[in-house]
Amino acid sequence: MASSMMRQFGLCAAGVLACASLAQAWGEEGHQIVGTIAMTRLTPQARAAIIELLGNDDLAKAGLWADQIRGDSKYDWAKPYHYINLPRTAEMIDLSRDCPTGECVVAAIPKFLAKAADPSLPIDERREALKFAVHFIGDLHQPLHAGYKDDLGGNRIQIVAFGGTEAETKTNLHALWDSVLIRHRSRGEWRTLAGEIAASAPPDLVASWQSNLDSVDWANESAAITRMVYKDLPTDQRVGETYYEANIATVMRRLAAGGVRMAAILNRTFAQHEPAKPVETAGGSGQGAPAREDPGQVAPAN
Ligand code: ADE
Ligand code: ZN
Ligand code: ZN
Image 1: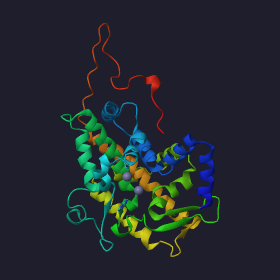
Image 2: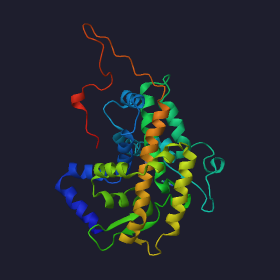
Image 3: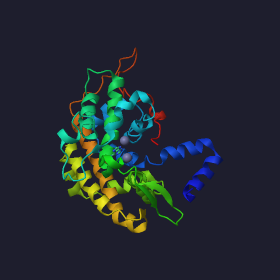
Image 4: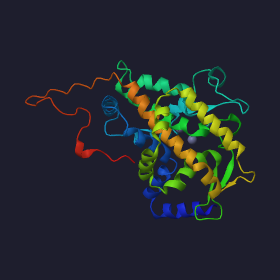
């Protein structure tokens, strides 16, 4: 057993609850960082629409839901929506080849955004659609979510990360890019890291990211990075500080692009949103925020 797993097990033995929250946080940081960056860039209309749909939850928390329901067979239909696979020899995504039935992350994003903004649909359906869309926007910015079917987007490639050190982790190539590299950078302080990424994103890159809200292009960017990841994969499948130093800027850039684009596409989606009218109460002024029940009880996003 890896020493890091031994240490985790030790923590788990100390308290089942502590273990559960640790296990949940591990691997979720990317979605929380992307959602946190997006929250800072919303227009008032988009913010109002999101509050109406999500209540007290923010985008950092909402982005976790689609992974939390993965064990629920009621949602098995959504499993292929988390990624798109393309042939190893392909330079570009071809939707008629790689997503012929529309069941892939590239098609899922516009589909669920449209549902989230459709006032004719029941509110519960719109809420779920928004949570799916937010999650899939994050997923598509993780390069290996535009990957190869034969190894399940790198899930079948065993990796030892930071071997022989305190941080040694037996993992796989997909999880390395989903979470291990991020966590090595954040040391668990994902909110701090989200702030640093948002503050350091170059304005010209931000402008170019938000000017392109086509999920096919996002997938092509990810696929280009995926090709590089496979080209640079060490033959002994061991990665350490050198690999981390060579790739962490790419990971940070994808998190920044995901957050900026999440906000931009939500701002566009909800541009026509009309805030729900405040409910008139007897003797009340009819003023005030309708969606948040009690501002004093806003739950911290975790
Ligand atoms: N399962 C199959 N292909 C996958 C991919 N590219 N990303 C995540 N999960 C997958
Ligand atoms: Zn996912
Ligand atoms: Zn993943």
